[in-house]
Length: 288
Image 1 (cartoon, rainbow, N blue to C red):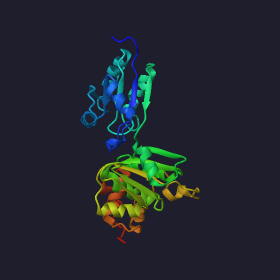
Image 2: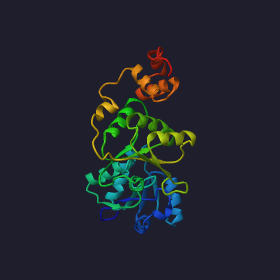
Image 3: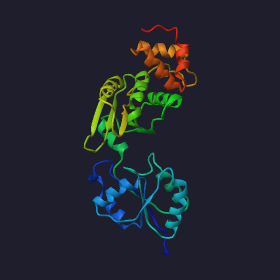
Image 4: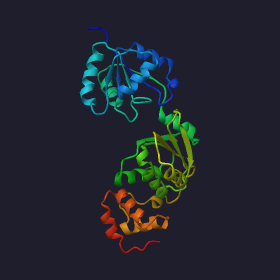
């Protein structure tokens, strides 16, 4: 058993281009006794590329509860451990934070090894204000929670960074159209990878693009700051405490150019209720 307590290294790894790893990160990954990796297959490719042969252990959201005590014990016994995420900096919207908190509670040294971050990478390439910004993490999956989340983002006057998945991007842009139609957005796809793409525009223009070109890859959305507070912003995005009647919600989408079938589907998804319920409430509304 080693005499001294080990250290937990929070080791940033590339989000795409392997050349973005730091020399320090390579050294740390070689020197530690163990690497706790969110995706061992992906991390093994990185280690092979840099001829690193350190032992790997899986550590992800599905086994974190069981793994944390084991990793803490090894750290107390003197092992140095590096935690790496799927890509980028651990502890940001990933299970690394749980291990970091546990180490701090146990008095174990936590050492940052900075490097790539999708949040900062997207922020600086978007072209919006960076003096102050908000990172809001992943957009909720669907329904009322998602709508309220987007409404809060619309009320935010600082630049806002979000993570989104390709199969939910179009729905998110549709919600942005109804809550902040004139707000510039940068959609950053596959950052630092071969097919990197940065698209900038209003929600409507971005939606047109992705309806023609289905979204693929990993996405970071950056929503621009608002230089001056808008008067009556609350009325612009609706009262979060009470939904407008279903009929009004459908009619609002019809007025924006959606057909009735699409409007009914969007309202149902937005509120997390069956489409038949929306259809029943909107059956007498004529298509525009």
